[in-house]
Length: 179
Image 1 (tube, rainbow, N blue to C red):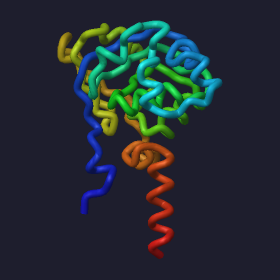
Image 2 (image 1 turned 45 degrees about the horizontal axis):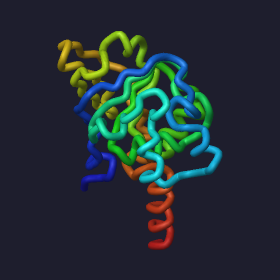
Image 3 (image 1 turned 90 degrees about the vertical axis):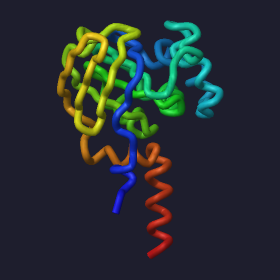
Image 4 (image 1 turned 180 degrees about the vertical axis):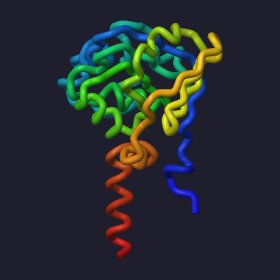
């Protein structure tokens, strides 16, 4: 029997969008005004994703593209930007991110790998990347570089495969009602 985890597309292949170190969530990933307004509708968030650092990002990005960042990505325990990334079908590979940011990304169902030492040195924006978030395989097709990183932990794969906390809770509730 195939589970949601097995059926999920863990391997993304697309263009690299490389960011630097210390990119904050408010103001770096998504404007602060949308966070304070408690906006969670992906369609309203998408046009503002990285708008302050990369205007027009949402018009160029395609499902499967991968955001590669340095240390301390997404400082601040907010999820608005991760909602937009997940809705666009993106992946996120970081050198590091604070625990609360990581928890928010996973909780939104965003495929994410962190603790990817010096990953920003392996790629540039526009490179063609392939990342398997389940195995930790990182491949830069443009530079012919292959690297293994820590994958998304097994304990979190189900949450991501079900679309985040909401999907996981919905399935849990359905199973509870069936018993």
